[in-house]
Amino acid sequence: MLKKKNWGYPRVSILDEKLIRAFERKLNTRLQLILEFRGNLVLDEKRALLLKLIDEKKSILMASKMLNISYSRAWEWIFKIENVLGVEIVKRMRGGRGGGKTILTPEGKSLLELYFTRAKEHGLIISPKELLIRKEGYPDIIYAGSHDPATELLLSTFAGEKGLKVEFSWIGSCAGLLAIMLGEADVAGIHLIDVETGEYNLPYIKKYGLEDKVILIRGFTREICLAYGPGIKIRSLKEAIEKGYKLINRNIGSGTRILLEYLIRRLADTIGFSVKDLKNRIPGWDTEAKTHFEVAEAILSRKADYGLMLSHIAEMYGLEYIPIIREHFDFIIRLESIDKLANLGKFLKQNARIFERMKGYIIPHDIGEIIYKP
Image (cartoon, rainbow, N blue to C red; front, side, top):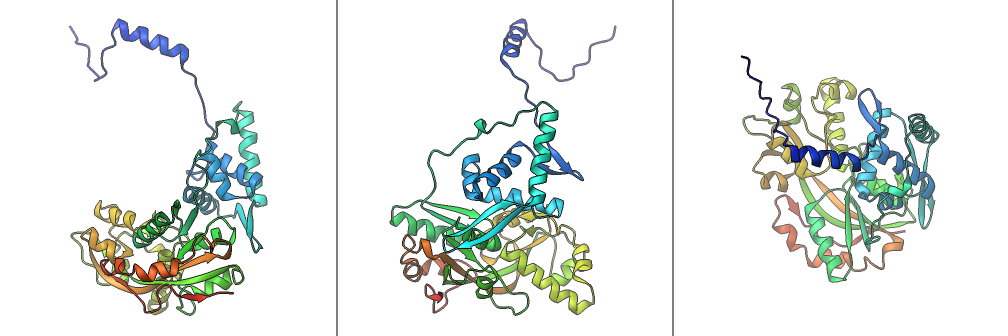
C-alpha cells in the first residue's frame, strides 16, 4: 500500500476550514498593473501616482509627502525610470528667486497616459483616495544632498538646539543642487569635482544657475578611499579593473559617483581605452548604493569586491583600503532659508571637534566661513 507523501504542508483541521471559509467571504482580490522595459520595472501604481502628482502639483516634494514616501525615494524612482528608458521624464525648471518647478516632459506625459490607458483596459481603478498624507506635515529644515555621517550629527544637533525638525534626504550632490534650485530644500551638502579643472563645488553654482539664489559655506575636508573585501588585495583602481574585481558603485548624481567618473576618465587616457570601453570592463558598474554604509555592507557580504567610500566608514567596518583623494565637502544654502539656518557657520566652527574623532576628516582654517555669496 502506497503511503501518502508528506509535502510539508500543515494539516487543515475542520475548524481551520471554517475559518478559511469565513475569511474568504471578507477577502478582496486586488490586481496591480506593472509596466516593464527589458525586464526592468518602469511603473507600478505608486510610481504612476507619483508622476501624476508631480504633473498636478509641479513639486516633487509635495508629491512625495502626499504619497507618504521620503523625498529621497521619490528622486530615486525618477532617476531609475529615466535610467531604464534612457529619456528624461521629469523636467526641472529654473524659476525666480524663490525657486523653480517640476513638470513632466512629453515623454513623461506619454508614459503616464499609457499607464492609465492600460489600467482602464484591464478594468483597474487607480484612485488618489488611497494616498496616505503625512500627518506631521513638512519638517522645518530639509537637507538634500550627499551622504555624510558627520553632517547628520551636526545638523541634527543644530536643529535640536533651535527646537526645529530636520529631514535628511541622501540623494547625492547633484540632486541636492536640483532640490535647492527648485526651492524644495533648505541646505545641501556637496562635494562635486569639476572633471575639467579638478576644482570642487564652486563651479557648480554657475552650472546650476544659482548665482543669485544661494550662499556657500566652507565645510570640511574628508578622505575618500578605495576599500576592498577580505581575501583580496588591491593596490590601485587600475589593478581592480584589470583583475576583474566586482565594483559596488554609488547612485547617479552623487559626488562619489562623479569622482569615480573623473578617475575613470583619467585612467582611460593613460591606458588607451575609451571611457565607455573601460566602464564595460568593470563588473558591477550599474550596481548602485545610496550611502557609504551600503557600499561597506555590500563588500562585507561579498556582493561586491570593492568600492569608493569614506575612510572613516572603511575603518568602522574593518575594511582594508587605500586612500584616493581628499575632497571639499561644503554646504550650499538657499537665500530664503538663511534665517532658520542663521549661525550654521558659527556652529560648524564651534563644533569642529566632532571631526577630529573621525578618521580621514580634516578641519580647514576657514570652516564655517562664507566662501560664496551673490
